[in-house]
Length: 111
Length: 114
Image (cartoon, rainbow over the protein chains, first blue to last red):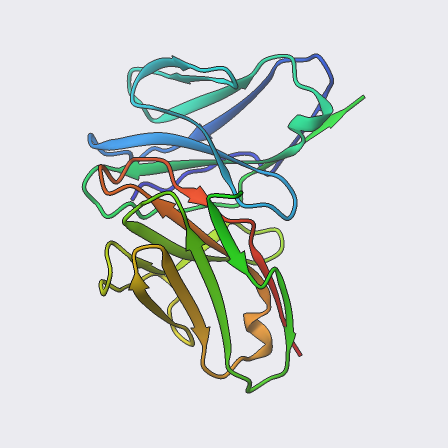
């Protein structure tokens, strides 16, 4: 599975838009880009998944350029409760569902 | 009630003891996973199961064993616990529909081996 690289940490303030970029240079054609969120002492929670272009749901947007070698998770107008670790992963079709978690990006939202 | 539950939530044990962590789910999913998380790191896969009696090793299976006797239950055992197995352990479930489907995680078990 493709290795992902993302910033270790980011700081933001309430009400701002936060963009977290992930690099996945070796992504394969049957790989999907997936983001999970983890609060302290809780299990990760699925946020969003996409293959190409843009995906939006009630929580976030995911932007994927045409070459798919990177992706950007966008959190609109963050609040203190968005403080968490965000993991970018690559999930491959028909490969057993194994997920490879990196270190993630620790987002700290300040008042 | 939570869809994925883990027991115990916290456990302190001594080196050499046998420990079993339990995971139960009411989501009706076929696939179940065990991960461990060390401080400041992401999750690493220990074992996974696609169906009852199906067992597969993950990236760090040494020192662990699992049992899947029923669709809803997946147990992780440490036959002889050692201090470097101190970690946060998560169970997760997934439908069998596609490997890109969402994984649903339990609340975790914090294990300390003295």
